[in-house]
Length: 118
Image (cartoon, helix red, strand yellow):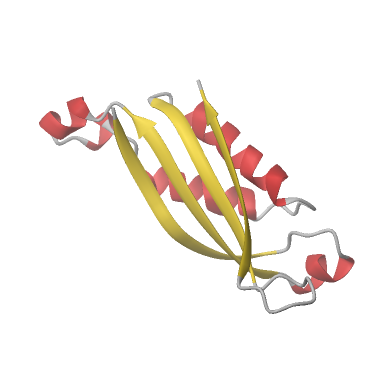
């Protein structure tokens, strides 16, 4: 078993419960971790034998572009697509962070972490 991480995917999106968040948008950070058997790809040196992190990044970008009120909803969609589109992934973990959230204080970010496995 091995781990592939795609860290600090930076995006601008329009999530949140406030109407203003849907209009103005905000900066987000997404981190993805997947567990898969990487033994074959370590020997074969073939992209088809591993988890393509370009595909992971594409899933994150597409799902972050769909407005949701809750970050949990976005993370769940990302996890579902990873498990549905990349059969060799045994477990996926996603952190979705809203940078500088509008919560009335000096807060760098709020993060939700969710995981799913087969």
